[in-house]
Image (cartoon, rainbow, N blue to C red; front, top):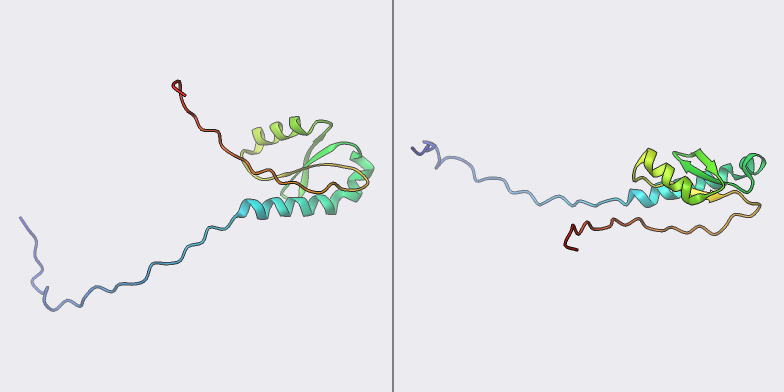
Length: 112
């Protein structure tokens, strides 16, 4: 059974609007930059307490420190998940920052 509109001839034509323009902001780069700036800001204080150690900066503060940056990274991602952070060595002169993009390894299953 079909439903019909008795007033279909008097209905105004549908209004067609243009599609919205959507832009995807790269927040990971912005967050990483924020964490790096926090590292630079905190470095003078950290020289007194953590010289020669690596620190993990997340949300603008130190969340972990230690002698091995790989151990720190693994511990950070286990606790906080896949979110940008800055891991830096506390030295007298800061190193040039390097950003290594994260990639996801494809699960090829048993056949791959």
